[in-house]
Structure formats: C-alpha cells, structure tokens
Amino acid sequence: MSTPMNRHLNGQSDAQVDAGQGQRADTAPTPLLEACDLVRRFPLRGTGGLLRRPRLQAAVDGVSLALYPGEVVAVVGESGSGKTTLGRMMLGLLAPTEGRVLYQGQDIAGLQGEAWRRFRRDVQVVFQDTGGSLNPRHSIGNSIALPLRYNRDMDAASAAAEVDRLLDAVGLPATHFRERLPSELSGGQRQRVGIARALASRPALIVADEPVSALDVSVRAQILRLMADLRARERLSYLFITHDLGVVRALADRVVVMLQGRVVESGTVDEVLSAPSHDYTRQLLAATPVPDPSRPLQA
Image (cartoon, rainbow, N blue to C red; front, side):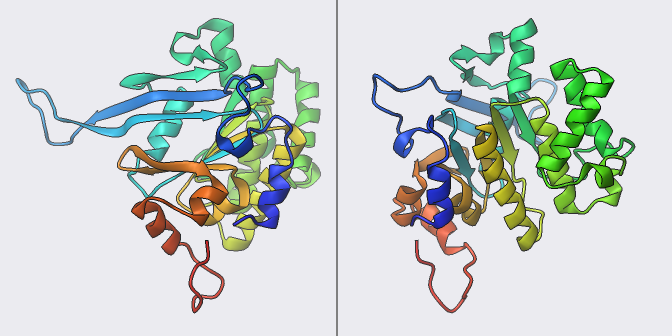
C-alpha cells in the first residue's frame, strides 16, 4: 500500500534508487554503505572453559545489503533477530567475524587517518536510549557543539552559532533549550537533540536504531515527520532499525526483514508489505496495531 507519506518521501531525492533494486546498470550509483556477507558470532554464555573453546552462535549470519544515496532502508525484526548487531557493524563499532562493510566502495576495516575520520563524520547514529546517549552533566548546547569542534574544526563562536541553527532546525528554539540539561527535557525533546547532534557533522547517512520505540504515539509521529523533512532538506540517507512496520510504512523506501540473524525477505515497502512472501513477515504484519482493532489489517 502506498500512503501519502510514502508518495511524498518517494519523490524527495533525485538520487534515490528506483524500486530498491538499483537504477539501470549504466547509471547505477555506487552504494553509499554496503554489507557484504556479514557474519558476527558471539560465544554462548556458560560454554567453554580452561581447556575447551566456547561454543559460538551467529547473531548475524551472511547478511548483505546495499544502501544508496538519498534512500531510506528499514531493517525489521523482533528482539534478538540481529538487526542491532548488523547496525553496529555497519557503523564500524563492531568488527565482523566474516564479511566486509564498504563505504563508497572502500572496506572500512582498512580505513586509517583522515579516511577513517571522514567515515566517522559521514556516518552518524541516533540511539534508542534518548537519556543514556547524552551526558547528563553537559548542557544541550555543549553536547551538540562537541562534534562541531572535533569533526568540523569550528572555533567557539562559529560552533555556538551552528548549535543555535541546529536546535532551531529540529524544532527546539535555541534561546529556550541551549543551556538546559538532558534531565530537564522530555523523551521527544531529547530525541530531537540526538538528531541535531547527528546532523552537526553534516553526515551523508544516519543509522537510527529504534529511535522512536520509547516515545508516545503523538511524539513518535512528530519525530518521524522531522526525520522525513530533514531527509528532503539535507539529502540524507537513513538505515532505520525497527520492529515497527508502521514506522516502515511512514518513512522507508525498502525493507529488509531479519529472523535469527538472516535476511528472510527484502524489497520495496509496497512489495513486501502488500504481498509478503515469508510467514514471519506476515506474522509481523498481523501484529502491527491498527486504528480500529475490529477491522482486519489491510496491507
């Protein structure tokens, strides 16, 4: 089903990949960020010992996906499906056991010096925990100024002006919020600060890990609208990690469904949600809340 929000988003970026399968071979862009057969294994708790190797379990098992400039890809699955581990590997925060992560065609494992710093600047993250991701002793203005100084080499005066611009851009008037502490903000306001902090580095891509799951429904809609507006204004790409198919409908172009560390289904939002081919996807759809519980969910 194509919603008005989906149609609005689908027309926002000239660089966006048609149907999630890439453009024609002669015009296809290089993926902005790509996972190539990623595997991540962790030792099972309670196994192993002095003379025994621990048993390993794959949290991510052979996952490949490509995200193109201007595109929003949602990775969907229940807790334990491997989607957050995948996101951490694509951010460079967790090394894969096997496989590679490519940024603009380059393996991030080999990036050093300025190339690594550029990757860290271009690929930012918005966390699920709006409180825990902000230093409780730093004012909102100081938290946003930090990446301005380190990633963009701004002096104090320039950083202060940019902090005000970013706060205004995410709907938090700088004069009222610049000096506030995280504890003085609501969950939705803290999430807006997290988005402003991610935008401070002028990224090409934001990895958003369950950024609205802890928020009230009305606040969630505001944050999703904000992210859609920023996508159009800043030409951002998003890797959106979520368990909520309602969020996928509102924001994403393509969806990747994960179960037990593997991709079980992928395609455009319209394709996957209108005619899911895997039982697990159908179960996720059936569990999605609808405005009128007495009516069956229509894909």
